[in-house]
Length: 243
View 1 (cartoon, rainbow, N blue to C red):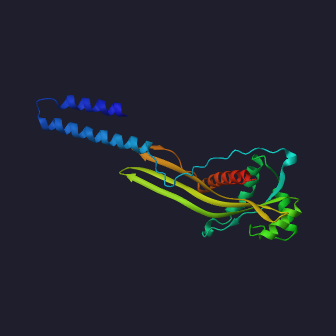
View 2 (view 1 turned 60 degrees about the vertical axis):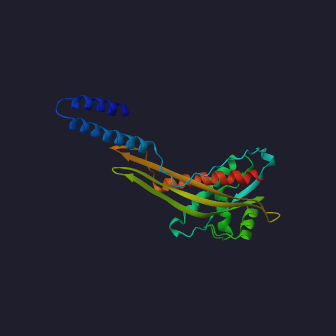
View 3 (view 1 turned 60 degrees about the horizontal axis):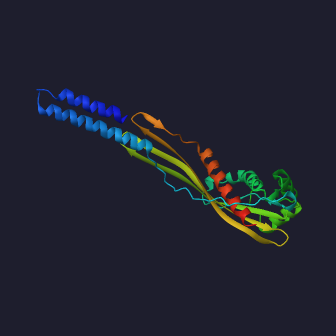
C-alpha cells in the first residue's frame, strides 16, 4: 500500500515538472500528500485497537492432582443472580455445567451429576432457581452424599460498547464483562473452606477503512457465554488451589 502511494507521488512529480508553471507542480504534491495521509490513517486504523475494558491479568495457579480415593465429593448448587439489571436474569442457569466441568478438570474433586442433584432438589421441594439458603444447600449436598457444597453467584454483567470514527473509517468494539463469586462449604463442619471472586471479559472488534473490513463481532449470546467461560475457569482454579 505505501509503495504504491510513493510510486504515485514520484509519477505526479514527473508530470508536473514541465513548463506549465510551478503551481501545477505544487498541486500535484498536495494531492499526493492527501493520498499519503489517507493511507497512513487506513493502516493505523486497521492495526489499532479500541479496547474499552482492560483484560484482567490472571495467572492460573498450579494445582496438584489427587488420586481418586483422595478426592472429596462436591455438589455444585445453582447460582444466585445478584446483578441489579434483571434483563440478564436467567443466564446464570447455564453455569452449573460449566462449573462442574471446570472443577473436574482440576482433578481435585468428585462431582455430583447435575441431574442427580436436581432430583434431590425436586424431592426436597427446594427452589431450583438458585435462591437456596446456605443451610438448605448443606442439606441438599448431604442427601447427595457430598462432603463439599459449592455456592456461587453472578454479581454483575456489564455490556461493553465503543465506537471510534475518523471520517469514513471506524473501529467498533462490543463485548461483555461478567463477575462471579463462589464459596466451597464443608458440610460436616458447616464452614466456608474456600472463597473467591473472578472476572471474565470477552470483546470483539470490527474495523472499517477505505472499503476494507477486518474482524467480526459475535452475537450477545456468544460474547456473554465466552465471558462466563473465562470467569468460571478463573474462579474454579482459585478455589481448588485453596484446598
